[in-house]
Image 1 (tube, rainbow, N blue to C red):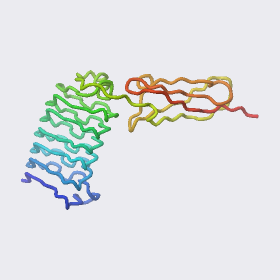
Image 2 (tube, rainbow, N blue to C red):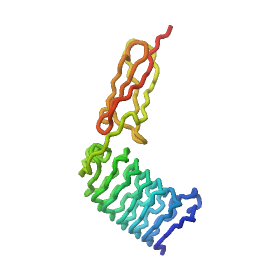
Image 3 (cartoon, one colour):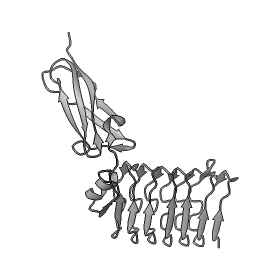
Image 4 (cartoon, rainbow, N blue to C red):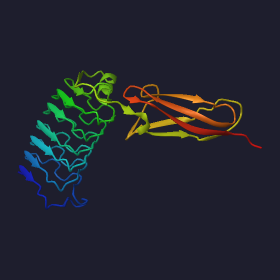
Length: 256
């Protein structure tokens, strides 16, 4: 008959295998009478299925000291109608709010950079999700079986791109500055070839945070001086939300 929980600041561990300041896996699973939840400022993560199937849960405030909302953390909380995700949360993992059919509106804070696979799967009542420009990685089928959902976000940023690619209605909140491609992690592999008279085109990988960018959509690649022995170049030019160019060198050598 558990109906209300307040986790005070003095608590440092919940669950037999919990790490300090974390709510462990399965801890409140299937607590159907739980209606409200207050999480203290000492907690830093909510793990796998921690509150799954808490069908009585109606509202939650996730404070900014929680950085990760784990897989299925609030999955199948069918009566959950109000979720406040505070500034400080960085990662909404896969299936975090799957089948929360009572949810109607969610605002993702500016601190979040990643939304995992099917994070809001089956949220059939969801009509609006606001996604900030800070989100650079939205994985597959995040809003699968959310027939009413609209995405609110900034033009040409990931929310906009994701909405277009997945045929989800998009409502613009305006424009913001683009992202410099030089701020991304760019690697070229291999970095060395033996000369054989053919053009060399090493694989270029570009990552923005956890997201691997897509050639031809997020950036273009051009190769220079990539046939003869010497220093060759691969130039990456940003597209869409990415601007600027970065040149990476690789070598072509001749055996003597």
